[in-house]
Length: 236
Length: 105
Image (cartoon, rainbow over all chains, first blue to last red):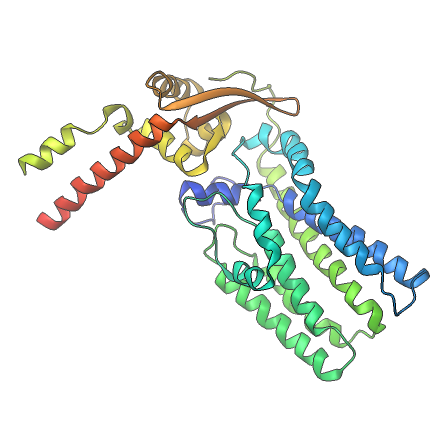
């Protein structure tokens, strides 16, 4: 594809799967949702919540539910104005496969799977990635010193694994994206945060990570593909 | 050898043309795509792509539909059932010819 000359030649299905993420909008939407609801949860936790109740998780869950429920509609709206006029329309990934995201074991397996079958234009790169980041961070959060060292080690390992494993997939990680992920764990070693706030930091970090990736991709996409001067209209 | 040559002569000529083969291959992979995507991916001119799509549509291999995404008009193309069958048949026949050539050589 002209936008990403570094992308290896792939089957049409894989290219279509990659095409869904070519504008960075799915990453931005997922990242912004995490950021927004993580911030609301954090605010709630600091100002209103009692430590025992921890209702702030409600906000995170609500954000993710909203993303699954209305995310496609928002993306369709954005893509019809940003992507389709510039580089065309391809049938989006199948929504029904989102239901497969229920089982944690499936999530981990899917996250480490380089890509969908060549003839399938379905991929859930962002959701897969976010879940893994979440899962690792959630397991590793706490003030226990060994847990914090474990977090640092786990994040570096996770970043390296994702980068290497997905390098030849339809949607490979960029090196700087993996680097941010890798540095997150060691950075947490030097930051003292109240235990009840640590878990809320995680959606915020994942949100920043995804949004940054998405924005970088979007800027690159808009630079390479300026808006066409004349409306396309009826062309066939 | 004679059988192989006969197989080649039985290939679907409508699909065998490189531009139309590229269109069928792209649509087979992505399910459906609009005119602009096919034009960019295949490196076609508007007139060229339009001509090939018309031939495939007339043969019943491709369905062309006008859709709207928001206020954006799209000319969406997809393979029909007949098109999928024809493409599968073409692929298997072509693969058979090439494989038999490999095993003979």
